[in-house]
Amino acid sequence: MKKQILLLFSAIPFMNFGQSMDQNNEPVLGQNNQLFMCDSLTDPLNSTTGTGVVWDYSQIAGFSGQTKVIEIVDPATTADAASFPTSSKAFSIQGSITNYFNSSSTERISQGFVFQEPSFGTVLATFDTDQQTTVQYPFANGDAFEDAFSGQLSFTFNGIPQNPTCTGNSYASIDGSGTLKLPNSTNLNNVIRYKIVDTLFTQVVFVIPLDIELIRTQYEYYDYANGNLPVFIHSSVTIQQLGATTPLLEQTVVLSAVEPTNFVGLSETENATFNFFPNPSNGNVIFTTNSNTISTVKIIDQTGRIAHQEEIYGNYSTLDLNNLNSGTYLAEVHSENGVYQTRIVIQ
Image (cartoon, rainbow, N blue to C red; front, side, top):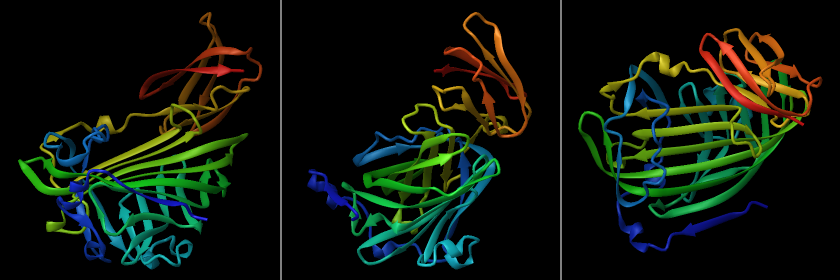
């Protein structure tokens, strides 16, 4: 049975400040905004919470006019309509994630999402066993709740179809109200911030079974005096081996309703990521990268000797290191993006 806990913060004055989420400001089909892409390394300001706070993004860097569209679409018009037959709306962040949901006067319920990631392709999550509650109305500053949900994932990795079951839990809150400072001296003075952290647990089989968690942390800033869609979004999705400190894959999208006046070069968006897992390993090591260039992988022992070397074509390969002795090695990746080094352990 679904476990759901409403957490009311002890500071009662929170409830009387600013705006709140309720059915009256639910987004409707067809609403859309074009937001400006910002530096993915932007601080999410996760500790800036409470009443009367200031979130200062006035100096945020952008990508010279690059934009993404956020919109509320009819699920029946999407490519994945068959997977979400009971959804009445879908909140889409262009090229990133689309959440399918419906709502009543008391809550918003998610039936799942579709996440686009270059290495994993399209990740489709359907919460058909136990749906996810993402908002409870009215939802005001200081309100929070937890929810458990479950269903199935579907994606293809390096040509291998994966359809594991999944369980998850989420924590949703309105964690702050106050002023949002955006570029061009734009100050929005009556903003609330909605935060959701949801974690999916599953087991997949690449070469060996792996316990995987997918974690989404998303901040949405609302100024309901000027519309029902977010005016600023900081969304991060991480896919990692359970308990690992280094993610297999990570995608962060930062979007602003006001165009930044500071800019970063395109080269800063093209940094390659490289991952080895599981780590520690019994000798079968999976190598992944978001780079489409040829990579040379060198496994170097503690004496500096190259114990293994091979070229990798594409985003995925399995390294057979079973002939190596147990111990700690330096994994060195050479590509046109530079040289990447990390430690791996062979058990």
